[in-house]
Length: 178
Image (cartoon, rainbow, N blue to C red; front, side):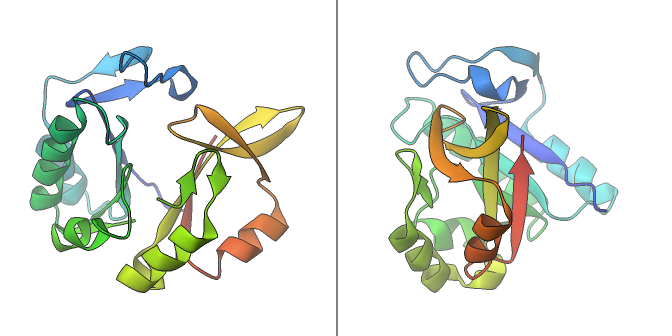
């Protein structure tokens, strides 16, 4: 088993939030903790302990007034620990290489569904070995389903062996949030 640390960024700050509370309208979330430290502090901490494969999640949508501030925090973290962190949130085939060039590893889930065309484009742009699919999920009717758009939209896709087998054709690893 591997421990994978994270740096969640919302409204330009490193935070711990309750995932299901995230709301794009008003850029709101229920916060458990808001750090006074920037992303590079946590990246350097993870690096000092040799914790590779941690992830940065940009929790505001790209349309948010806070997205650029989120990206600045991610840049600080990636510069502090190049090659040690993955990133998700607003990543697509057009900007994925830019994030990887900054040191990241990770547009696939859109409007509550898996977009296989986007997944194929992302795999082609950066290579399967650089893709980690974030399978955020929530329980509904006793089963776990992939949720998208920062835990706000349920897909019709259950987290089960057949799903994992199909998605494994395009990625190197999964990051499961439940």
